[in-house]
Image 1 (cartoon, rainbow, N blue to C red):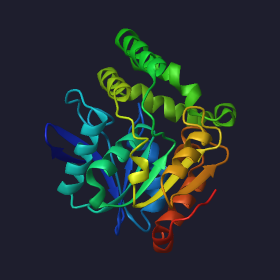
Image 2: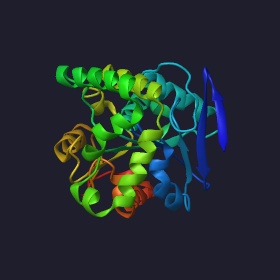
Image 3: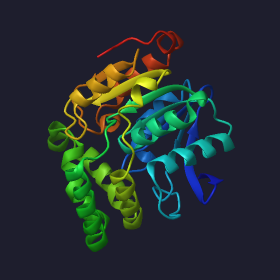
Image 4: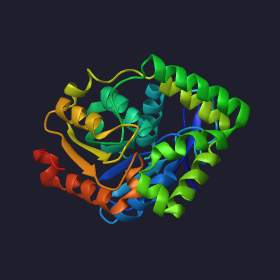
Length: 271
């Protein structure tokens, strides 16, 4: 198990391969295990680094946090292990962190990969739903959050025909400490809106979205694609919100194509 101390916390991480650093940021309420297929495949060519955010996975709980402070955590972590500049990829909550990282530390990024995520902050109804979920996790624990979220994270075909993936995802969610879920819900509820920041992104950017994503739908990804000049868009068939787990070979292919030097230099669109 690899760990790295940072200010006020210690982050657990997996590192595999050599070459250009590719950093993978997990979603909520998950941990780095959601990237297993990407770590195994992409490390044949790149230095793949997947950390657990503070309080998630094997990273100890170390107090509350915000989405911008998680970006600062990742920056300090990557500085500490000599992994800058890098290409930064994030799914859902990890995508929020990646966008905040790009706002704060753009000079140290070679590329950005936004996976099943969105730029807009929570509206009033969504904020109230976060508050209700905080009460649920306080009273019933992590399994109750898994019950609420699981069906929304996966494409219907995944739920019906891939029980092993459903179980893996549930196990990861139920392992997330209840206090971390509470902290994360507050951070997600209060995260800054990034809509006006997207046109400022000048680095090579790939947007990936599951065709059946019910949480951050294709239309959201398409709107982000239009806001980021020269960005690429990959729509993944047979996947919901968890496209890297549901269709790993297709996601890996999209990431490989993006990471090739000509693609990084030229931008363009794909679907």
